[in-house]
Image 1 (cartoon, rainbow, N blue to C red):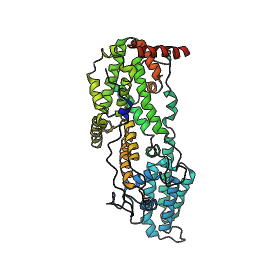
Image 2: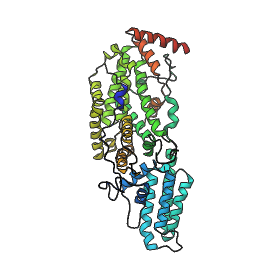
Image 3: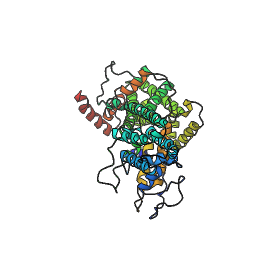
Image 4: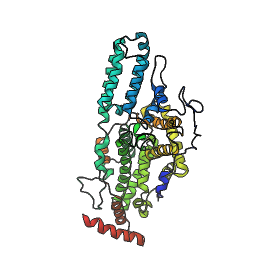
Length: 466
């Protein structure tokens, strides 16, 4: 029988060292973390560091880190306006006669910055007023080289395509995540057991991976920042932005749905032989997910099998060959802050870096733990130092974690989608926790007085409403 994971097992803080000593004065403390990038600085200084010049272009890591974290202190639309204003001012683009030689050195760098920004954070450009800033600053350099206008047109086309694709996110599937509370089996027209749809563990693991990667593609890096931010304490009383984390939340709901779907499929059959068969099937699916590098589906399956309504089915588990399951449980054991999992994740990440095929590039992390790591990083270090400077060192670490995830989510799924299987995984009814307990008690009778009282209560409250 599996052991049941407690809530505390799942919320262990990430392995974070103590915060670095906080400097109290000066624009920079310690050595630069990137060429020319301070470990702490004022917002104005960091914005100036972002602005390209004829003989200067910020490092890619700096651009990503600052654009990711800057939304804690300034709205993206306002940031772009300030960047464009600095470009116009520094390059004297508001003069009647431009220095064409100077602009031809500066122009490609400006367009490169705008391309990186729109590619990585396209949602920053959803407002037409933001687009107008782009058109204005590029319009000022276009007379020096008509290629600039053409490049801007291509950039905007790519941006519109990205925004259109992001608008077709997975939110429409959220309505299917609501559990049903009754024990009675849904009619066969709406519910079929999963094994009748897919009986091959490897195929199901592939389809789960397809769903995971499809959903991950819609999560923007900015959502990790926006998920935990209330407001900048040195700013006004209002947050810098509205809470836009729909895709991140949808992905967490998918994980929960998969947990409950696994538990529902196990508890539904009336015969213990069939229940044992379903458990062994999911063990094989979980093992294939591990081999693929799909740790999120792996953990969802293990969590579903560890839910109390499933783990209490002693007679069913007695018929299960559990050796493979215990190996998988060991890999995802929360002991030591998920030490075994983190080792396996590093191995998958290394394989991805040296991969020759899309199949070997797949790394889908245990998402809830990734979010918790980022949360504790955010909580463990201050956004600002006592002197008011932004703690850029903290945001470099944040960008490192988020950037690695962004690389993983961009892997193209090598498996062909099977619509019948993915549709079932998205839409098959799932029991609520009470519904699972009732199904469990009807499959294997309550063993003690507490279970008997709960069974009696559930029968009257749930079945009495159907």
